[in-house]
Image (cartoon, rainbow, N blue to C red):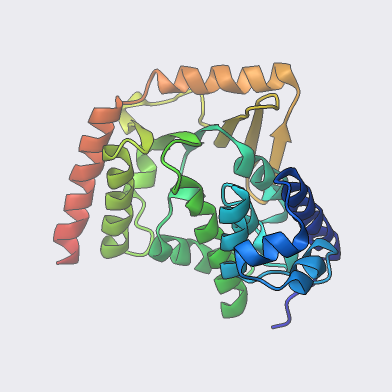
Length: 274
């Protein structure tokens, strides 16, 4: 399957590299020495003519202190993208210092294990080719690297109990997935709240929402439905989404009780898998 070229994104990617290099006070030659890349290759990337591979992008991130930007945005250069309606939200996600999400049916993308993500991306309609699915899987797993930095972004994840109970990929896949969330929660990398079935109707029944805050930008809200998604920047709408989230959070279990429930459900899956 041919990969679609994306010249506009390559140009923007190159501009970002040039701006960060200049802000660091480095010439192309100096950056090439520190990142173990040729000066010509860096020049081509900055001009939007070439793309780095994953190892190059990781070295650029490290040398320029880019917080994973150059790795996370590799998929936008050649068609390996998230859904079109999520593209704008992805850019915000990479810059966020604080993220609060509510997931009604599936584990949020940045928390998904490879096996769980594989099953999610193998479903849906129209069917995806193996090559397309694998491209999307790479993108999703790279997004999860946003959690590699322990301190930022601060992540709160509110999960409907349906997320724990829906058997995506079977018992073994679910056990691994829930234990991954459990580990992130127990290590205090994320804060987890489960919205239990017994809460009944609640303020976020309508679907997925992600709230994001930034160092130098106003907060935004991203809401998503079937094949659709929208970023809200209007302050009144963002505040309304924040208030709805807070209202639903009041019906959710505490972080500790949520971890206890996740552990219990994971153990059930483990017994079934055996």
